[in-house]
Image (cartoon, helix red, strand yellow):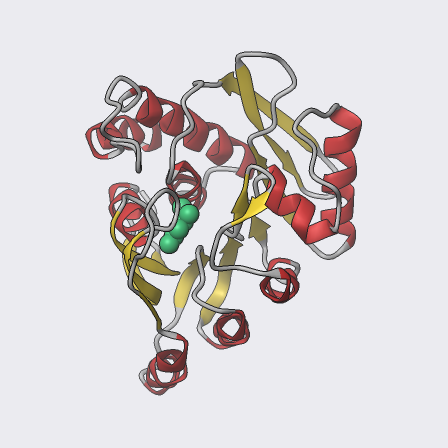
Length: 276
Ligand code: PXL
C-alpha cells in the first residue's frame, strides 16, 4: 500500500459530517498521512441549518504557509474543498506552487454549488476566483451545477449526453486536465460519474437513491483522492468512490433524523477492502 502525505484544505463544520470531519477519516482509512489547513470554522454546515457562527481563517493562512516553507514541509497531494473566501483562493494557489512535492498531485473539489444554486456564502466574485484555482489543478471534481458556474453555462435539470460533452469540452478547453464530473444520470433511477482527460471519456453508471443527502460530495471526493493516491487510475478511483458513497447513502436513508449528512463511518471497512 502507498503511504502518501495529503494536505486537505477545507472548512471545519463542527457538526454536520462534511468537509474535514469526513475527509480525515476517509483519507486515513485509505492508508494515508493527513495534514490540514482549515479554511474556516462553522458551528454547522450551511445546508439546512441557519444562523451558524462562521469564522473565516483567510488571514491565518500566509503565516502557516510560511512556517511550512521554513520547515521544508511538502505534500504528495493537496486536496481542496469548501473554502472560506474569494481572497483565500490566491493563498491556496500559492500553496500549490510552494508546498507540493515532486510528482505531487493537486485535486480541487470546487464545493460551492449544487442543484442549480450557489451555496449561501458564495457569489459570482467567488466563482471567478474559483475558476483560476480549478483550471490550474491536476484533477477536478465538480458536480454539474459547479461545472455550469465554472463554464458560464445555463444549468439544466434534464440533459442529454451532448450537454455533458459540451461541459467537459469547455472545462478542458479552459485548462482542466482531468475532470471527474459527478451526478451525471441519463435514466430514471440511475446517476453516475464521467471521467474525462481531454482525450478519453469513461462513464460509470450507478444506482441513484432518491433521498438527497448532504456531504456526499465530500465523501465522494475524499474517497476518490484516497484511492487515486493508492495508485488507482482516475476511472478506477471514481468507481470505488461511487460504490462507497452509494453504500454510505444506503446506510443512512432509512433514518429521517439523520438528514444533515451520511453515516459513512460504519462503511469504512468496505472502502478499505476495495483498496486492499
Ligand atoms: O459539503 C459541502 C459543504 C462544506 N462545508 C460547508 C457547507 C457545505 C455545503 O453546504 O455548507 C460549510
